[in-house]
Amino acid sequence: MEDVTSAAVPQPRAESRRTKAPAARRSLAAALLLGALGAAVALLASRQTWAEGDAATAGGALHQVAKGSDVTGVPAALAIVGLAALVAVFAVRRTGRVLVSALLALSGAGTIAAALLGAQDSAALDEKAATASGQAGATIDAVTFTPWPFVAAAGGLLLLLAGALALRFGGSWPAMSGRYERGAGHGKAAKTDPDRPEDLWKALDRGEDPTN
Image (cartoon, rainbow, N blue to C red; front, side):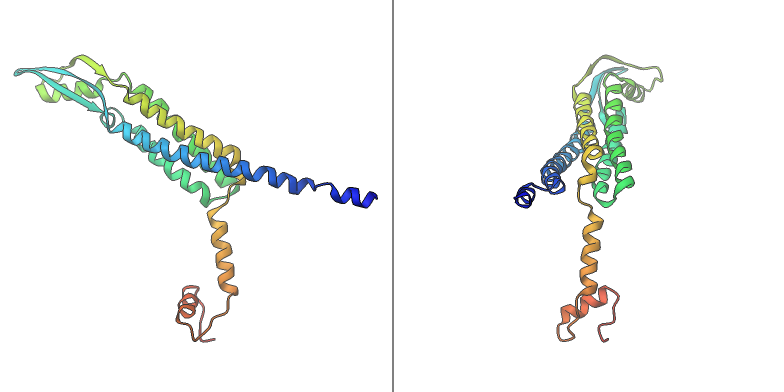
């Protein structure tokens, strides 16, 4: 009677795996979505107008526009770094994965900081005014700032959240290298049929001599 009762009790390890698997899949999907969307938003926002105004020149007022890339190139650069880190998360394991996940989170934090610092920065406009008027001390009058820097900061926040998910759940995510290693192992164990050209090519790709 005791044996039947003990056999009916689920094993803790199996139960733990069943519980963690859905959470790992959800966190993986969320990190991929947040990271890709965050990088795209930050890149898009950096190409939009962040500030505009009129520069006084000899020929009259000259309207000047400064895009995000004119104000600061940091958000766009960090968005690309974050996107690369998001992909690299699946190519490394253990300590490497933690480091790459941290880089992803830091890319998001840096994007937020750079975007917020550039939200009220008129230096790029003043530089354009000086170029347009030919006067080193020329400035822009009545500068208007747009919401796009805050959109870039929102993209950075998404990258930061993706990095946080990778740091928290990345240990349970699959690794790209692991799949390749298993595939390579099966290839070496497979037999080569000399009468099948595809098997000969596969053997050559593995560095084997198909004539043996």
